[in-house]
Image 1 (tube, helix red, strand yellow):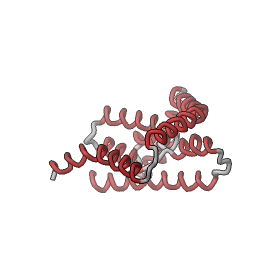
Image 2 (tube, rainbow, N blue to C red; image 1 turned 60 degrees about the vertical axis):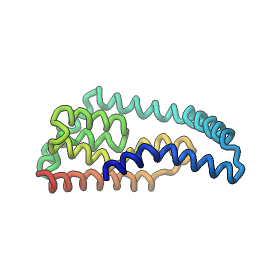
Image 3 (spheres, rainbow, N blue to C red; image 1 turned 120 degrees about the horizontal axis):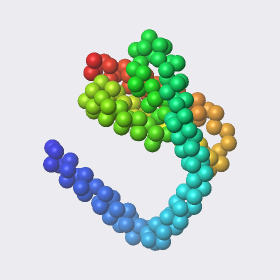
Image 4 (cartoon, rainbow, N blue to C red; image 1 turned 30 degrees about the vertical axis):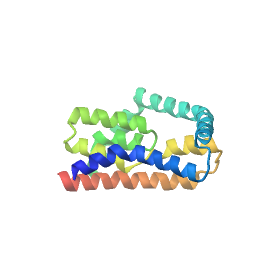
Length: 177
């Protein structure tokens, strides 16, 4: 079984590219020209995303380096301990909806400190995979395409993140405690 999965993973990308090129030939689409045009559009899009991305990264850096995040978590710690939420995971739960990079940094710190097979390492990994970067998506992608009214998307995204965080804690606690 493992051998087949290895063979599939090795050949999946080249076969996909070959199929795309074959379909382009059959439909008489100039594949290279379309690819170059897509690259141009992608470059324009990345340049338009830069101000939004820079603003988000600066805000996150200020939040982490100022100590505001640690102060906020220390205020919440009594409440977190009452509901069984590990305070060590709170920075990840707060940063994950904001920035994937910042959340990955926190996850790496947790895994480095407690180990990948520890309860907190497993919880951080599960939480990382069970939530999304809602505010980042709304700021960068919605801003890039000019969507101004994003209230409902924000509510739904944050509710989904909250559910992902809570279910991560419940499942990892249930499976590994």
